[in-house]
Image (tube, rainbow, N blue to C red; front, side, top):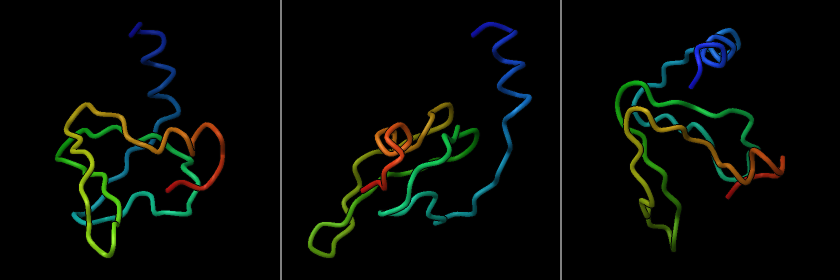
Length: 77
């Protein structure tokens, strides 16, 4: 990434800290943000017949959001 692009992103980015087990995006919400994991680990999961099914682990450096919801402005699953 160029230095100019890096500076533009830093000018508008906000840092947020999420405690363990915080749900960043729930089913039915529209994804308004992309989140960069800077420390720790995030998981993506869904419910199937009442059971949590982990679909993805995301570690440091990973950008997370519901991309379909983010671009279409429709609630995510």
